[in-house]
Image (cartoon, rainbow, N blue to C red):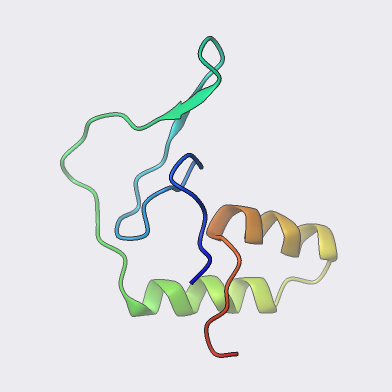
Length: 74
């Protein structure tokens, strides 16, 4: 699927956890929390729609960095 890696701000492909960057250790950490919502198919299709409807290349690149490169439906 070519999604973002485990050391990105959105490193989990199953839930909506968001990482926090540590300037001291130059690493992304994930705070402990128990109420993350699992991603489902509609979330992935919404991400793809956002990327495909981006009006500028810069906006598209920003979304790809956020959600990961997508190879679904191709």
